Image 1 (cartoon, rainbow, N blue to C red):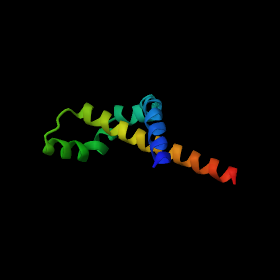
Image 2: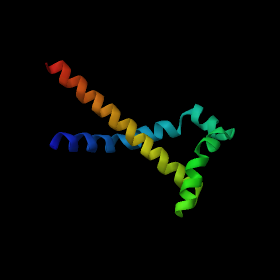
Image 3: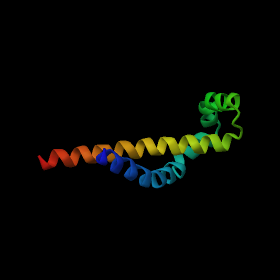
Length: 88
């Protein structure tokens, strides 16, 4: 239980740097600038509008934070696995 909590805390700490890295990536900016990014997220926008959440920017930012957290969780888990393998 303690190890899982440490992994989650480290993932939370890495979420913001990963989010900022994703948000400032030129490829992602171009993807949204030319419309394909908005089209890809349209089903999520429609789902959230049916639930009662409005504001596409808020939905997009929340989705990017969730994606950033999942990436951070994967990175921390892989690092933990690699360290355990190196220790023996």
